[in-house]
Length: 481
Image (tube, rainbow, N blue to C red):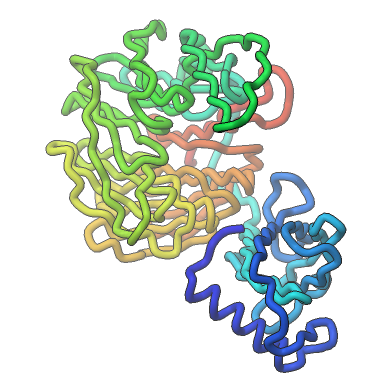
């Protein structure tokens, strides 16, 4: 259950208590200031009945919870109103389950649902997210498909070789299926592919203190340095990839995908994105779950230095996620998926210039920028929106609902369009420079990343679409008309 601010939580619980004390019906009857459940540790979650699908206006919602007393009566309320279908009873294991329906006229957003348990009394707040419903519209765009490796994760275009490089990885650690693929941008044919080198086996987790020694496990097949993020260096003719599972990065030759250097395990914590400022001879990798970005010298390939980022949210830690690089203005934009903030780094000095809040964004994870205006485009996975910020002041220029699971964004400074991969909605939303929705492309089975190509072409990769064989994952080639 996602957390709310303590003030909001107290207000909502008090509102529910007021409703109960005011006699909102027999189903909500409580003895005023009667027995309290002082040890309650309840958890409530809401989801679509269809696994992986978003909750939409007019749709059914599955309710599940645990930590209640056996036989305890539980009521769900929105504000002071009991929800139809929200009168539930815990089973013998203290679990609840049920179905409620979102009104057809509901707006998109995250709604606080008050959960009240009776005899003994306990109240808390759970969050129900309703995603926006946006019709498909492809006017002004031509969309074609190309194939790449299974489990495709990101892509990056090289103007020097007129090639698209994709990374892919499948499964849980130790990951054995992973490829770096080179695709001819003109013919969309695969011209080279390579499987990363075998990685060291992860250390076994020690048994808890006092616990018996675990039984010997059968040897597992070794994993590889699976590749996830990707960036290109057209001066050095290399491709930089992130190895998230091994907390490091690797460098390959663009020409034949031969390995140039594999950095040691632990170089970058859960490395996510990689971008290269070839004019300065620097490569940057984001350290997810850590308040830092690592900076590499592309000539020496020495161990990197760290740029620390201090969150402005009291008591919270900045978690570096996506990166967007302006090589002319020498600025690196870093979004935090834990604190809903954007850091702006001066790439000449590798110092943080400012940290801006993303008001209205939740679970911010994707970022891009407009080099002409300095505007910052932030995709928020938790709130299903695109937030456009003034890069100088941090003021919100636009807050646009664009689709469930907004994951990544790429801004095209020539065509003046922002492209957003919405993984939950299976769409690529397109907005103008002011954040106004102008198209919604799809279906895109599970879009994971968007990248700019030549002449306004945009590449959107679809990860694990569910089919078998080479047709399982694909690249959407989007051409403005």
